[in-house]
Length: 318
Image 1 (cartoon, rainbow, N blue to C red):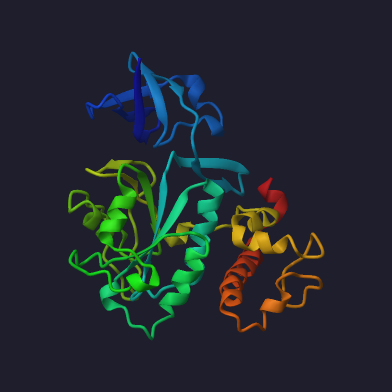
Image 2: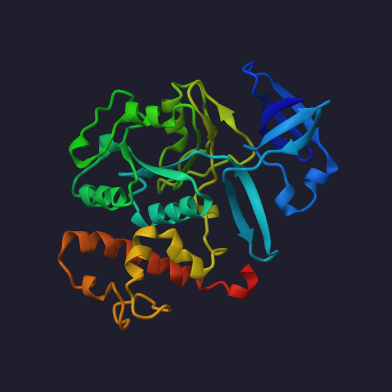
């Protein structure tokens, strides 16, 4: 019996990396009972046991990348056993968008994956573009590590360490021996960043960036890629990353910093809006206190997501 990890899937056949240190990849099919039902599908990242060319067992997963297919009311698992979510953002083109970062953080909490945020294209950063200190502080308030790089320039120096930003070498150390998923808006430089981190040994295909600076991705969730120092899964672009499958009643738990404050609200069904009676956030709306502003920025993102999620009827999600 061989222990292995699923690297690539194709219907009933799977390419599996043997975990005996040989780095050999073998092809195996799965026993029929392992493919019955949505929750039993074998996905990339799974740790399995192989005997006579057949997968006979799937080990318990530490986490899953999944979403609810609302119209079909089915849970679709795409990958498993991921250690780090690398949220890649651009400080130039496309411009930095706080809401997209918060959107990815929701999935990180839902999937139980440790997130880090990487600011790319820092060689093009202009301080007039946005308040970098504020954005870093609001993330560090969540104990999220932040890094600064230029994917096009391996020699870019760590300019903003005084704000708590770490550099390329720190990012490489963070990813060492881990399995990472890279998420980011189209055009932020995911492929170039992966090439930089793997010293050019891993090149992912992406189409030419369009006129507005938004690239379109051709990659899927179907393959794990091993580099010398870490394993990665690339991801689709932002257009396929909706949150309509989430339940509104679960959303606050994916904002742990807000959930702590919300326990002080007078009413359990508090909507946390500026005019909500007995709301623990009310005093923050007109506050000039820096820490209040950090929390309020997160609350504003949360309320926008509530509005978005509420457009899909709850009965379709259960």
